[in-house]
Structures are given as structure tokens and as C-alpha cells.
Length: 210
Ligand code: ADP
Ligand code: ADP
Image (cartoon, rainbow, N blue to C red):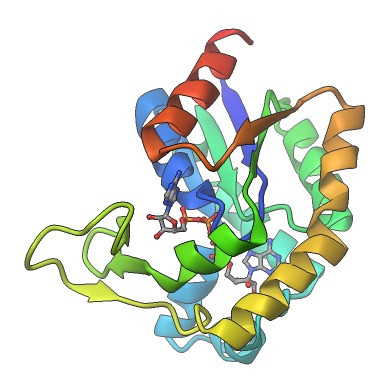
């Protein structure tokens, strides 16, 4: 059985944290458009130069560029057994494009876990978020402390002004996805204020019941 999951929720909700665990548990490809764009920026590609200022300001990369990198990524062999989408789609236009791409592959979205957290938690989580440069593992100084000696970096867009802008973009452009996926009967809400392990267990249980 191929499994396609779409993680939805505000920045800092825990989408990446959960997506990594789900990918491991169900042998899915983890497709994070944020990670893909950060990789382009790090490699100073043309696309990277284009998206760097947009990401720094907390805006959204245009839909056509975003859909194009997802289309390419879905061609890779590791995507054939299933994908957990993390940070994509972020607009209704992207969601429609994803439906079309999956349809071409003879696949469809089985579950959209929507992780809910309040704005205060978003700011606290994002301000303590650090990523391991070598493994890509996401940590939090207080909630998920990194091991000693980890080579950590803080994302340049995890500054307060950019975070506020990202939240605004989320409410304006991404939240409408909740109704979009609700109408298709695939959305389930999960209380993201629980511990990382409890959020995982709840999503895992929902997948087992599909
Ligand atoms: P997103 O991908 O939605 O932006 P992340 O998975 O990067 O979110 O998580 C944001 C920050 O919050 C990270 O530092 C992560 O370690 C932490 N975090 C994730 N889930 C939880 C949770 N359930 N409780 C407390 N902190 C969490
Ligand atoms: P977070 O984990 O905090 O939700 P991401 O790593 O998913 O953030 O995304 C970081 C930034 O990359 C976004 O603020 C946006 O500029 C860009 N980005 C990532 N995914 C998309 C997308 N699907 N559409 C448009 N822009 C995106």
C-alpha cells in the first residue's frame, strides 16, 4: 500500500518533527519544500538566489516555482512507496496542483494531519529551534534538547519579525487548506500542545485506522 500524508499547521507546530518520525515508521519519503529551498540557497543556485530574500522576510515562494520542485522530486524512486509532505502545499493553488500530480501517479492523499498550537507556543517553539547541520535533526533547547557536541544552527528566518510575517502568511494563505481537505474527508486535527511522543502516537493511531 502506498501512503500519502500532508502535514498542515502553523510554523513551529511540529510538522517537521512528526514528518521525520512518520517517514521512518512507514518508510515514506520526507518531502519538505522548506528543506529543499534551504538546500538551493546553500548551494547558491539560481533558484536559491531567487528564494533567499523571500524566505528571509517570511513570505511565500511563488506557487509555480514551488510546484515545479515538487514535481521533480516526485519523479525520484524513493517516492514510489509513499510520501509525507511537510510544508507543502501552503496555498489552495498548490493543493490543487498536488492533487493533479498524485492523480497522474495513480495515488491520492490518505490523511492530512493538522497540528493545532496557539500563537504563543509558535513563538516559543521557533525561538528555541535548532537544527543539526550534519543529520538534519530538529531540536529545541527546552522541549527536545540536543546532545552535547551537536553541530547546531539556527534558521535565519527564525527571527521575531520574520516569524510574525510567516504567521500572517499562514492565516491568510495556508489556513484555507483546512476547509479544502475537510471537504475531501481526509483532514484530522491533532492537539499539538501535547508532547512530541503523544502527538506521534495520536497520528500513528489515525494511520492504523485508515
Ligand atoms: P514545523 O515544521 O511545524 O515548523 P518543527 O517540527 O520544526 O515545526 O518544530 C518547531 C520547534 O518546536 C522545534 O524546535 C521542535 O523541537 C519543537 N517541537 C516540536 N513539537 C513539539 C511538541 N509537541 N512540544 C514541544 N516542542 C515541540
Ligand atoms: P516552517 O517549518 O517554519 O513551517 P518551512 O521550513 O516549511 O517553515 O519553510 C520555510 C520557508 O520556505 C517559508 O517561510 C517559505 O518562505 C518557504 N516555503 C517552504 N515551503 C513553501 C511552499 N510550499 N510554498 C511557498 N513557500 C514555501
